[in-house]
Image 1: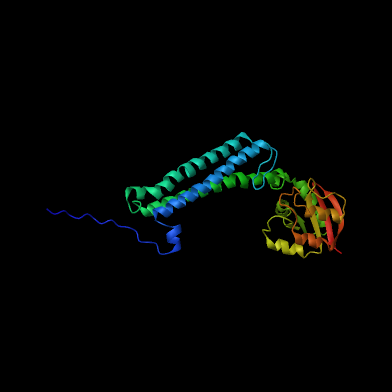
Image 2 (image 1 turned 90 degrees about the horizontal axis):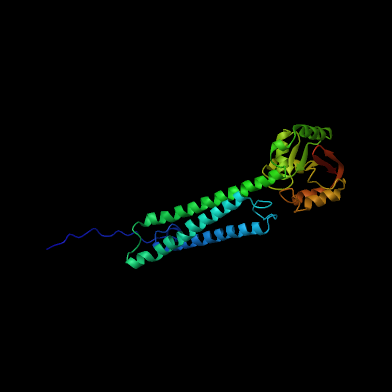
Length: 291
């Protein structure tokens, strides 16, 4: 009596390179290790969120670096942090480590199988899980850091155009024109806002923050006469003394929003002198020129 032989099991070939062996691997043991590292990363993120919630409750009026938020934490913020913490710990730690980590590392060995039934799908499941974790982190970062810092900037009247009264902008524009000021500096948020509102009749480059438009920097840096435009609520002492202007621009802790001025600007001031200082509407305008 003869028996028909069943189809032979088909196994994937051994990987031939580093990427196929350790990154996009279809080996169940390597995938298990990848799940372990993903769960470990998620543990640290979840712990950081848990710690941050408690720090905000313990010191409600402090500002923490890299994370926006001033004053006592609102119930909505607390619930958002708690939900994000729980989601990460449940779906990316308590689910990923036992099922993805233990399952891939030991299950095929326990049942005597060479590998998982569908190695390619097994590999894809890890990368989809990693992508999901990345999306959650990115969403959290945008909501709590990006938008939070935008709110912080708005609280310092640096962003919304509606915070600038058109009559005040007209007075500033007229003052700069009367003093023949074509170039100047303002803080990071104020520079681009004022450039837009006065239609670049005076080019204001940011003295701190990110230099997004280098032609502004180059044209202002070569000017012999400049204006420094500060919000009146956050400006150097109105003494008209060059030392006070230099000290203010060198202060990394001043609440301008983006820290101290670039070193090249502070160095440029050493060869200049203050021509005038005046309160124009809601700004303090310092005019300096080469000696």
